[in-house]
Length: 385
Image (cartoon, rainbow, N blue to C red):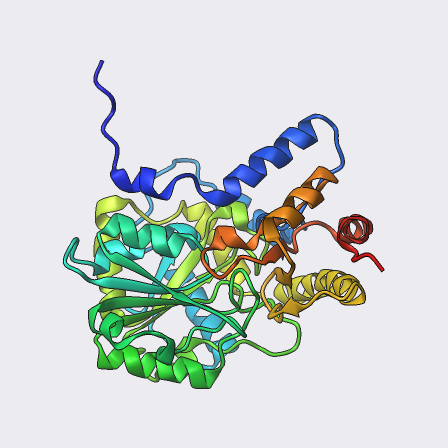
């Protein structure tokens, strides 16, 4: 019997790396063992009740296809949020496209931008979110990883001229996954100017922008100016509103790019179910719950930060988002030792080159579980005196 023909990119990239850790954690739970899982960004705080209530109220008696561009009221709610949060106006009809979360949008966006196998480049920082590379590769682009060091912020000057000349798109992430670093307005301005000079799109992954400690992360939309030429911002309800399972987000910005993505969607599917869109309308229209969730993540970050600083470890970045990025001698050894004692973290190397020697904590366990985990950290990682 002939073997199934597979896209070779599947075999070149292998398994999505965090899934392997998740399988081990599931096996431990099934055996009834102690597990506190910091490995994947899926918070466990309940979704604010008004959101599922909005969803239930919108479930229709007759189920029909959603439209390609999504509900007008959802696009208006996103536009109102963008104006409140960033102080900029966007056109709900032409500059917003609701999405089924951010991962799918991140992966599929290059499909609308890239001429396959034409030498075009999609640029991203490493360590970083693995989907940037995966989407670029499947679209037929050269995936160019730029090493991040120091403060883990990607700047225009970090990208070589030869890469800029081939760049179709540049991904940034602020607050950054996995490090929690923030890209400031000056660096955003430099990236936008370089993208415009080289006719590339700046794809700004800003899904964690409402979760920060003290410094409010700016958006590329604030720096781009009216029309948002060459700039797209990727937003999500997942972390802001505790809606990871709802799969609801948005792309906002350059109208020409939004039109291309809308045309792509007409080939690959439709918008999220309209009852999910109704829940998203409720979520984007309320800021109080996001403020409350920001406080919860801040408290958990402080517990872990204080524990590591007391043990003499360096916490790098980690000023926003839902991650703590900690420098260790050997990220795999630290990960395995913690896993043996029921604390699941991500070794930095799974986020790409430059992640070696760091471990990432996703601040998803409860505050009580976080305190419990500190006891394990002190047992496993406290340097000998």
